[in-house]
Length: 422
Ligand code: AMP
Ligand code: GLY
Image 1 (cartoon, rainbow, N blue to C red):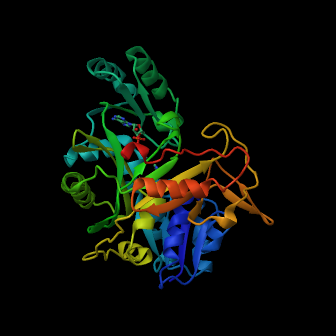
Image 2: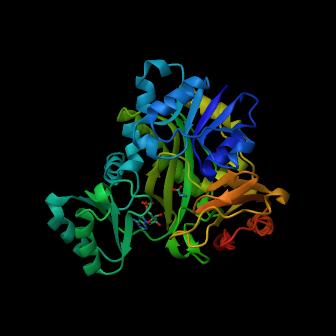
Image 3: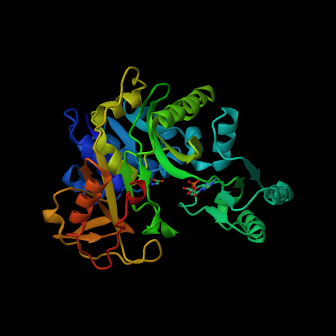
């Protein structure tokens, strides 16, 4: 089978690494990929996000299966484009259709879906220009902190958590006036949930699903979960507090009703669902849905996964997951992300990366590029080291030992990934 993975982050490198191990994988392509994915597949340059260009690459390279890594093409309707194009009828694509991708693309869509299917989540109110006064009244009724969310995709920056009611009222007005562009034409005000966040993943084929290993993501730039939010500075899987009781609740109260809702709403969902959850005194609640895998959770999750990833992705894309089960290693996996100096603020690119040749654990590239013989930085999150161990400490120590060998100007990473779980 010839496979094309869309995307070029650490998530896509981890997917490509795992897919390339399948005996069914003939040619593996990535668009655009990065300097790391060259070692497991072939990078296709110059395709960008244009669906016609992607179609041409698919036909030119006899692709059988397209796996969509990031959310943007899904929210833009790439699956609908493939299903509606008669030249692409023999090509399978893994990802939800445009309507289903609204579970990530629109917070208000996701909230009303959860309300309808009685999926536990924070109380909320959807606010637009026509009910701003109702929005203020809702805020006045709530206890701080106040959670304001831009309805649409806002590059991970669209959520404000504010302690002060006056500031919350002011920000609500600013958001509706375009603080996040079109993304905040509508705003969701939410009850603040106090607990520990974790991520659960499922692969769905439209009706049946397999549940993948869970993970915890570390979003803040600084150790001890301080400083600005980032795309994710590290991850750990499994999550020790995710015991059989919590697992059963997540499956019966969240995953099963979500898939039931998807079927009843006649959405076509063949792809990964990422449940961003919070454990509030033993009760799991949904903070957000994402219509894709997480980054850097994927790196830890796929290292534990023992299934043939290509087989399950192919079956999911055909609606044939019935009877399949996921299998995963009981080991702990820790991923530590190295970022450019200054990230998540401004940072420079093009720094030479040294030390990659003698790393004894897995390295998943994200923002890297090749320039002649050199591998250089090409983004905020540059690469990650992923290591396995019997315990969190063992996995983290191995990842740290190896990441210390990697050098580039301004390199920064957290040394405390997983420490809070000990
Ligand atoms: P989201 O984009 O919805 O995942 O929100 C980004 C981050 O804001 C989440 O990962 C949480 O840390 C935090 N957050 C979002 N909603 C809530 C909530 N209702 N209560 C507490 N924290 C929240
Ligand atoms: N690690 C969080 C995300 O992928 O959205």
